[in-house]
Length: 306
Image (cartoon, rainbow, N blue to C red; front, side, top):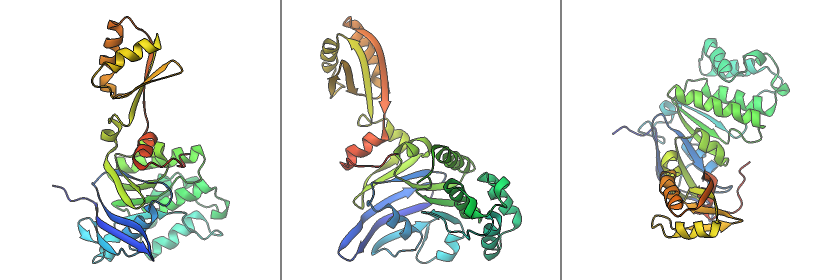
């Protein structure tokens, strides 16, 4: 069995009398784009700070590349890159100069600086002062900074926060490219549609506790996550036919649209039942939403998803 790139085991953290993380455990496999989800205040940032040894856990164990972070910080973090919130730069210096300063501290050759600037699409603006950069450009420069040491694990904490749609698309594309090169990426986000588009696995936490973890594909196939809208007439008669099907546990009619909790694999059976009952079918529209699944699991009805 392959050793996970990141293993969190029974992690607990309190600040004073307030417990922020409780008995948290999950694995991140090699090559994963791992989404780390939770509403504001769920404990995502605290968990990341513990992973990076910026905050010490009260209990539990963190292992990266199979080694304890506590005992092997120096060797481990040479292979880890991270962007935590907004990256800090010398605003009056150029992007390239900022990276060169960091590169000299880590004995990184200029060739690598060229590579990361090209990777984040800032080569043509590398000689501009950072103070002239947009927020999206600064985020991309922060990712370039995190990539300088050619990490095997990249940790990104809310990398698209505050970006316009174009900036968000650029970051998503960059994550896909890095994943395609075999890099393992740990992506904390509150943007659920973002996780749907780029992540292969995820963990959802709420109030510092793990709610669910697994592959995005498997979770997207659960009936809790998949709703099918059926436009058929007469609607009430169609609903009666569907309620008689033993694999459907919920059938509702809203403004002549029938909604059923069913995975895409059940659509042929649904269609066949309606046709056999001489029901006219105008459309069958499958809809899946990680957001709906999140709200179902956490009971959280206030979540920033934009």
